[in-house]
Amino acid sequence: MESHSTVTTVPKPGAPLTGRSHTDPRGQAGRPRPPRVALYMTLTVIVLLIIGGLFVAFDKIVRPAMIGKFLASMMPPATAVATVVAQSEDVPQLLPAVGSLQAVHQVTVTPEVGGSITKILFQSGATVTAGTPLLQLNDKPQQGDLANYRAQAKVAELDLARYRALVAKQATSQQTVDQQQAALDQANAGIAKTNALIAQLLVRAPFDGVLGVRQVDVGQYIKAGDPVVTLTDLDELYANFTLAEGERGRVAVGQAVRLTVDAYPGRVFEGTITAIDPQVSSDTRTVKLQATIPNKDHVLQPGMFSNVTVVLPAMPNQVTLPETAVDYSLYGDSVYIVRDGAGPDGKPVLHAERAFVKTGSRSEGKVVVLSGVKPGDRVVAAGQNKLQNGAPVTLSDQGAPPAPAQTPRP
Image (tube, rainbow, N blue to C red; front, top):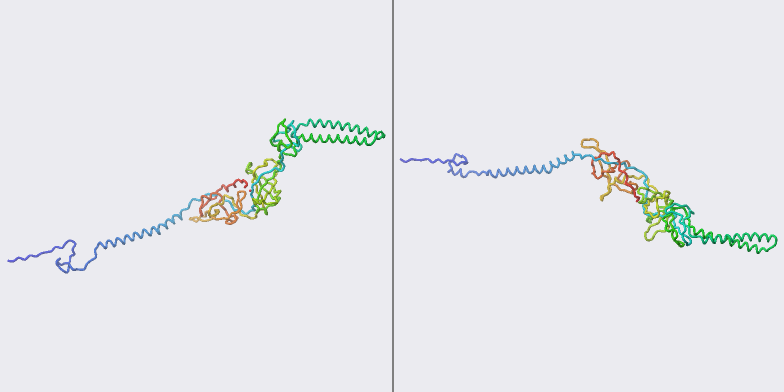
């Protein structure tokens, strides 16, 4: 008897249950499906692209917007500044120059004749008046000649009176009287000449002034013209200075000048132009001017270097600011004008607005502003180095800084 066996095929794990034997040719030739790995990779790429796009959008759009909003909400602390109000005023025109001082009257006292010094009648540095005796030279020979001429004159005078009486009695001739008159005149001439010589041997001050340092000693023999002492009149001094020929038409005799010297910083001396040289130097193309400076207290001295400023007619209605208010840079001159504004919270605040300006002349610590500022504008006078355009500010109660000390350059 034949036995029949049945072979059962177990499907492999993961194989699709088709209800058919694995030996079914139709099952092996079924429709192909896409692999799951490719699907996973496609989904991963899509997710990464979405994430990258979000990062890019955040970096390019969201973050700048957030930073801008943050910075806009941040207000730097207000800076305390000193301010001034721009004013319209008359501004003097000044022509600066340099010069030197010269005495109106100054001489070196010298004798007219030679001789030995017997007396020195002055002290160095003394103030004397005209005619004050300063130096006595030996005049004994002249004094002897004077006595001789006086005796001759006395005898001639007596003889003349006697002969005039005799002429009246017709006891002598008129010729004799004339001869005696000539003898008297000759004796008187000798007296006058000797007195003149004696006067030359007594050296006197020719005018009021201050003496310098004595240059002689008692017993010294000096010749005519040898220096004895200097004499200077310090009541008035000349200030000699020069200006460029282009300024000649702006100056005239009688205009006021201001003068400063290094010995007295901060003090200004005033005078007037008294002379202008009619010629222009062909070498330097400058014109010489001379001003007279009163010096009643004798503080100025001849030979001092001086800063001279010619004061011209003032320019009317000029906007002026302190020199400290202008910020000078390579990009141009500028100032900060304080304006009214509103903060992020809507409250009123003050802020500094930068304005470029054109400046003009400077004098006495002020500068003329030709454009960029109007009268009445409140301008920062100190503290600009801490500001930027639009920065909030508060007004300091210290006021504007003082004007810098002038060394005239006026």
